[in-house]
Length: 132
Image (spheres, rainbow, N blue to C red):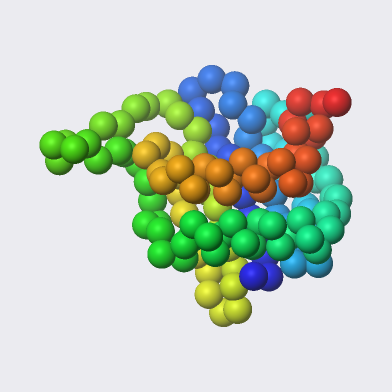
């Protein structure tokens, strides 16, 4: 894995809107867009071990085998449930010459949300979104 991107989009309310890129060497590039403390570009670094934690999670949840979009939940009876006005989270992973982009609006598997939250946690994006 050479690069991991996470993007959180707008909702009907005041959801934080930002993008993150994490490069294999540990460089983080943050783009604050809307409803965040820092609406600018910020750079930071994480350790190779922390990058590997994210990469391991990507492998563990079989990210490259996931659907490209999750917009609703499949119910046991075959019907679908959805909601409106939620933000989407878009995760993109670059591995060799492969690129996989997964949009999670509603109904994504638990492992996908765990990955999204792990990326936020390890990158410490919270300080740019909400402050100390």
